Length: 431
Image (cartoon, rainbow, N blue to C red):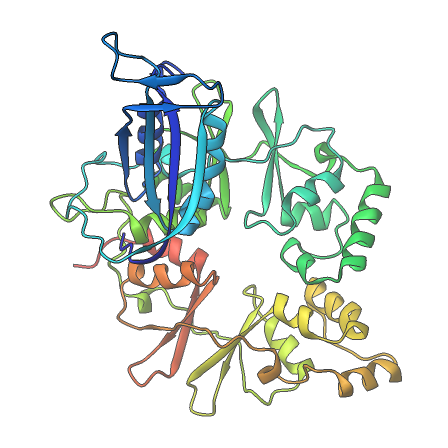
C-alpha cells in the first residue's frame, strides 16, 4: 500500500506483564495489526515512567521492574485506523491509546511482505460487528444501521448467527419506507417520524430477518469466500469460528479493498488468491443510464431508477463524463415539498409525477431543477485497458459504488459496479 500524505499515528501504551489472552499485550496487538494488513507497527520499550497508580517504574534498580512502559506505534491511513480502532480498544483493557494526525513524506516498504501465502476470511474481516437478538425491536436495528457504511445486522442466539437483516428485509418485511442509504438525506423531523413509526409497529428482528444466513468459517480462503458471495448474490457474510459463534463480517468491500492493497508473493501471485489483472473492459456493462447537464429533474430521476445502480452518469454531447447523480444526492437536493414524490419513485421505481399544482410550482422554484444542479463532479473514470485492481483503489477512496469506463478519447463506453468487480476477480486469467 502506498502511504504518503495525510495519515494517522496511533500510540498504544501498555506495561510489561499486561496480558491479552495468554500473550503479552504488545505481542497480541502487533499480531492483530499484522493480521488486519495494517501498514506497519513498531514497539518501543520504555526505561522509566508512571501511570494512573502513581508508582514509578524504572530500569535503574538492580531488580529490574516488570512494569516498565511499552509503546506500540502504528501509522496508517485514516480509513484503516477508523476500522481497527474499536477492536483495539476492546483488546486493551488497561492502558492508553492516542490518535493524532501526521504527514507521511516517504514510505518505502519491503517489496515483498512476509505474511501468509494465502489470505483467509479472518485476515480481512471486520471484527467490530453490531449484532442483535431475535427480540430486538426493528427500530433498534435501523438505528444501528442509519448513517453507517454497513447495511446488514446479524441476528444471533447465544452468539450463533441464526439470521441476518438486510436493507431489503427492512423494506419488505420491516415496513421501512425509505432505504437505509436514503435515510440520512431526510431532514431530522422526517427521520424521527420514520423511526417513531417503526417503533409503534412493535415488529422484532426475528420477524423480519432472513433465517439460516450464508456464513463462512474464519479459515476459508478468500477465493472461496468471493465465489460463495457472487453465487449467492450477497454483499456480506458473517464469519464464524469452529463453534459456529460469530467473530466478524466479510463484505464485498473488504474483498475489493484487499485486492487493491494486499501485497504479492515473490512470484507475483496475489496473496488474496483473487487476480485483478483483467482489463476492466472485460466486465463493463454497456447499458449505462446517462443524462445531459440540462436534463430536467423528472427525466433525471427516471434515468436513476432505470437500472439497479440507482445512479446516472452526466455526459456532455460528446459523451465525455462530467458528473454523476445518485439517488441520495437527488433526494437531498430536491425541494422538501417534492420529497414524498421522489421517495415514492425511488422506492417503487415509478415515474416521477406532480399530482398537484403546488408541487409543480415547487419544482419551478426549487434550487435543483436539472442534472447539472444535482450532479457530483468528483468522478474518476477508468480507461478500458485499466486492470481491475487499479480501478478499485480510486473507487474506494472516493466512496463510490460505480466506475465509469471510457475510451482513450475519454468518451463513456461502459460502467461497472462492485458486484461486477467481484465477479471479474473470479474470472480465469486470459492467456
